[in-house]
Amino acid sequence: QLVETSKRLAAYQAVKDYLLPTYTRIGIGSGSTVVYVVEAIAALGPVVTASMTFYPTGAQSEELIEAAGLNLQYINKLAPGDQLDVAFDGADEVDDDLNLIKGGGACLWQEKIVATAAKQFVCVADFRKLSSQLGTSWTKGIPIEVLPMAAPRILGELKHLGSINPKIREGLPGKAGAIVTDNGMWIIDAPFPPLASGKDCNVDEGGSWTVDALADRLIKIPGVAEIGLFYGKNGLQVQSGAQKPVAAYF
Ligand code: DER
Image (cartoon, rainbow, N blue to C red; front, side, top):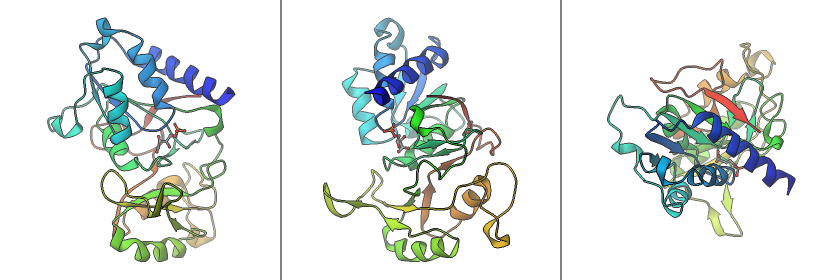
């Protein structure tokens, strides 16, 4: 119950601090915490939300927006160069530099597209998600969205890069075999030793990976569509959108 209360408090505070009544385009992430973000937004009432349009990051997110009676639109309808005012999303782990592991809900690809289309990206997570280094509290591995036929090649490359027992995410008990994402892809969960943030060293020199170095390496593996590492405040500015979360609420 404490976790749910923490999620709800974080969500209401994040909406209070970052959803300005003048905003018209808002990105909505996926997962269980973002349920409270939508609840907090809907609670503002149509006087505030009627002028707002909400952009989902997958099937669950789309359902949340529709069920709350909020205006729904899709990110492919955003003109090139246009931006969302803000995007809210959860995370599986958040380090001190606001680097994130995302993808526990297998929605990371559209989540990153929407996050980087927004001027501001606000991460909402309960207290369990805060950690000193990514990979310490979320030990299931970095979620990576992959082309199914490339999965064996990618598993081999991940082991070469130091991942410990990377696996294709299975659906049991909900589904025999690999889960399939909203984009028709598979997810590989790749555990790595805890990731340092900021300084630049990599596994070849026997050091641990930094978030940025590992992210840059993973995204280049052929067959990888997107990775569940979001850069923090030291990270790269992605396109015009701020992939860097401006705040995290716990
Ligand atoms: O898949 C994701 O990145 C989601 O944001 C999700 O992992 C967040 O999880 P939650 O259910 O704890 O909010």
